[in-house]
Length: 298
Length: 322
Image 1 (cartoon, chains in turn orange, purple):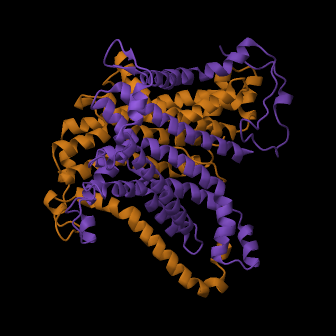
Image 2 (cartoon, helix red, strand yellow):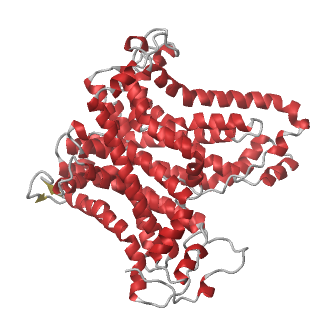
């Protein structure tokens, strides 16, 4: 996913809020807005709340009539069933290994590429940038078939490296574009001073530019991790043994094998969402500003 | 491979004065002139080399191969494929299931994208309202963003539970409907799930866009006696137009080509092809039927559609920049 460039948010609302003249006339408007806001919150939040509630229920209770949001037989059984089963824990280990490796490798490669785009002029610059942007528009299903053959030929079928390199294909273009626009926003004096003093470009990049790019690196890293954690199509096609499957595929397997142990499926869904939710919560500020401070445009 | 740029006169390279804005775009930032030197010309390419190698092996090569495969038979599984010319493309283009998949993809994409836009804009406007306190807005925004944070696999299993015949949605609507198993309803149902999953991206981007609209524009409109509705159509929409067009095009590119997981895990393209998409159709040809040549032909057609959309997107972005 990519975001669209927009201006930075400017909080400019206070003066309207405190104008007493508007207060009375505002009441119908306020009611109208709150009805809209709560309807929207129900649309967005209730399914998620239902998922959470079902993960604490017994299977019988999930389809009981009338349905109840708060369960009588509240228990962590479904979570314990997932966490005590080595074959299911394996899905999580695989997802963590793959997503962390993809994030680190993508960041290293993208930082170098962004440096080249941000601080150098060279003849192939614009065609290459256009190529990288257009890679994002290539549908995964298009490359899947030859890709499958290449991965088998490279003996990377059903291995970590197979998945890791594959995911870089999806994460790199976005990471490079986002990272370049971040570096463009940093003054050139920073790293040029090092080079003027005789330091190499590598020194300028890693000693000076990277440390001040931490907010940008964090938002790119979070996004990369999310893409790798969530990927489904290639994980389905490029792995075959159950011990190599990632969480999204594991979820599907759980649905097929233990047909409709809904509480366990929901518990695994929650557990499988925690890394992304946690990253989003911790880095929300970096992340949102990274997303909105202009990916595609620059 | 790394050449220090020390010989370069510093004064010409560095913009003087504290008031100078940082370079905001690569095209806009004038780079200092350097003496031509082979090492220096190669340096940016050295920094780019891991990217270029990866993209060549993982992207360019597969695209070239898939176009080649589209004109061959017995590919991937067989060591000596046979050249068949445009036969595969003709067979795909005349396959009724392909037509159904194409039609479903168009319906699914257009309805999803339009609904994403309307919901995203509505929620963004509500969240931007000055009549609601900052704290409430922050809490509500966190709730609204939630669908975006779940992987498609989780969204698929969650909605399968909600939509089950004895599930909570049927209870709330007092119905007894097989939402995902009824051929008349399945396409609409998966579209609604996709709408739920996808609007936050619009909302977040449009919220940032709304906050970027200068307040004096509204003030001027109010002075001229414009009603809130008129303000929306004459200030808000024109100011957001560029972002909205970008978002619509981006979302079309993604939705048309990348919805595989949601369909695969909810209906698998069924019942009776009623939710078959170009991606599930292609996947089945390749990995269920092992018709890699035909699947490649279908994949090439999908690529063509995406490239047309991408062309419009890039053209729009270029126009936006200038």
